[in-house]
Length: 224
Length: 218
Image (cartoon, rainbow over all chains, first blue to last red; front, side):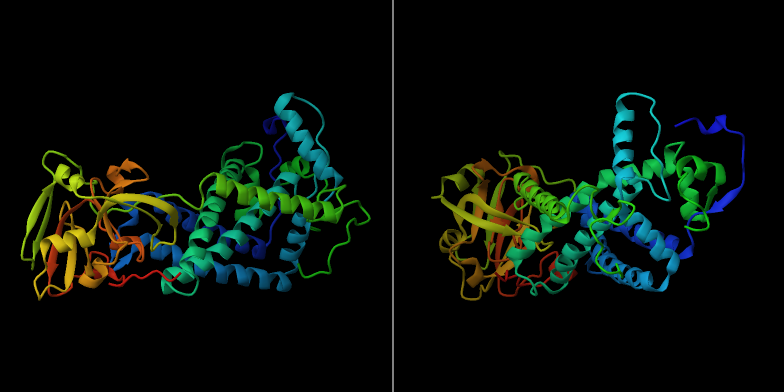
């Protein structure tokens, strides 16, 4: 990849994500971050015992946020049928081909030696697709196991204690295993100079035309 | 999502939810292998058996062997006090039982060494009015209680060793109550006083929403 600054400045913007996609991304991610933070208090005895009016603050916040996120995820799935742009993004994210393999191999090779040309990338590169797949899998797994834990945290009796004790570590390990993926995502979106322009696509909805041309040459903005 | 199941390969050579060049069968096999690996990792890393710990006494009470005392008092004919050495001199029992926290996690097959609570009860001789037993932690913040009947169940111990080692500070050194049939918050750690009474004292968490009886449903 060449240095962005070497190119002549080109401030033209192109539309990357419409409102539905951004709304789904941010509504799910806000819950995800809050759930991760409240969940991690389970490892911090000084924090986990903080209680307000007879209820443990972080434990109950975690359970309540979790059920709220299930509702948000359900609405997001329903929105797939309503929003053309969201559906197109989802299609583009979950479709992959030989170019994706080539792209991943190219990135691996870049770690070892410089050079080589990047295979053509359309709206999403293989890394973004991989991130989407892992995020969706982790979210589904965490919500599924979390519902079981949450129901018993409230009722103490719907599922057996032994079953819940088996589900608990699955939930924990799934969350811990996802942290590196999340950190990678945040690094590329917020810090890494050549990729952080993508963040603007998820906030304002538009990215620089020259950035899009360089990083997503196979994508024609406007046709999504 | 809303569409028909994808064909293994669309004209452009692209497939969905699969890797290029992989048949769907192989892809599913990979997925299964991944799931098995994940489940295996959970077992290897002790997923099914890993302690968290809880304390409302911060910093966690420190155990000083020379000054430690276990006080048994309240509605009993013979109140008494034990030093740590005297405690360890009482005939001990070893018990392997599962531990379950109300948060949902559990630890299978914990080995406890300690004294049956029934032994303490017999030695103290509760008076007629004594119906409940309260367990006090060292700093006076945490306490919990059982009925006299529950306290006398054979698998209720006051334990000083866990898995063959003296209790660690975070796990309640030098002494904790073990009541395997109820959730862990019933088992006071850093145990320093066992008090017999005629009314049930509500425990720390029971004043904050949890049930007084925390029976575990199998």
